[in-house]
Image 1 (cartoon, rainbow, N blue to C red):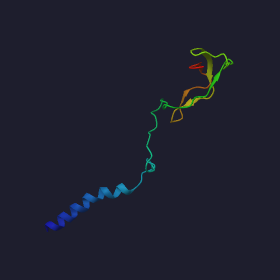
Image 2 (cartoon, rainbow, N blue to C red):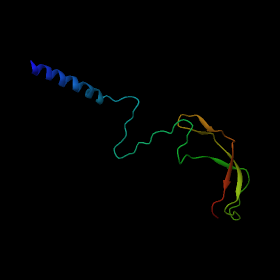
Image 3 (tube, helix red, strand yellow):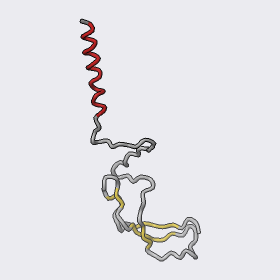
Image 4 (cartoon, one colour):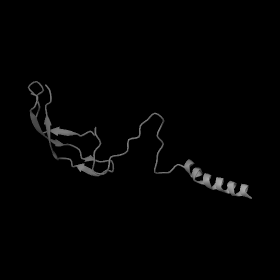
Length: 100
C-alpha cells in the first residue's frame, strides 16, 4: 500500500513541471547568445535613445569653437517604450560644440 502512496506523490510532484513546457504569451523567445534587455519603465528613456534636434541658427563648421552653444529645438516627439510622449516636438534644446 505504501507503494501506491509514493506513486501518487511522485505524480503530484511532477504536475507543476508539466506546465513549464507551455509558452506564455507574456514572454517571447530569446535566441541563444543574445542578451535580454528589459524595456525602460514608463517615463524613462534608455541610454542611447536617438533624438532629432534642429539647430535654430546656422553653425559654421570652419569657425566653430569648442564650448560654444547654439539654440535648438526637438524636431520629433520623443516617446518612451510604452509610446508616451516624454519630450514634445518643438521643445527647446541646446547644442554645444565639444571639439573643433
